[in-house]
Image (cartoon, rainbow, N blue to C red; front, top):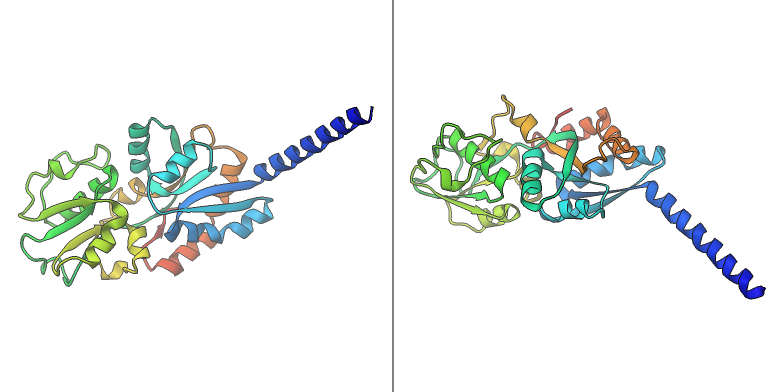
Length: 271
């Protein structure tokens, strides 16, 4: 009888612990993010989420692959580091089903130079380093065409994507695609006269200021919407309580003011 009672008590305690864990999980929102500016922006909403009964756990990633895989594997409730074209490209390449839940901010791509102070001063035939992943390579190439360095096919677009292999006329420049997060360090250690197109968040991490860029993307068209950084979730979780709590906390004047005051144009709220 005592043995039976002990087993019953053990089961009750185990179930109670499971219930507590499930409750904790239901009230913890785990979000993967790049360190700058995404994790910094998420820090701003921790208190607001706490007032709604949620604990926000931020997991910082330094690359563009792991946070999507972790989201697909269920290790994260959401991630915040990418724009929709990149997400679409990742889904197509990895057979995943991740979707956008909200547009949060826009990071203008910048063209920077080592010892170069203007587009006009760029040496003929110099090396131009660009990010190599699909959507960001497209974006970099469109910026280079915008500034007259290269010519792309007439139908080149962000939606369809383009690579350096599709360049119609390279203007004599050496276009060098590399892993996105290595572009700032490669520029820093390059020969004088080298140029680089750098993602907004990696430029921030490297201490580069958008006002010092030789050129930035023209945001007068649909670039801001196309390349807005998003909260991504697994398909079907867009309307979940956790997702809506996170999105509602981000789409506020407090976050908009923080972005405007903190990043001096390198990050622009899109809501």
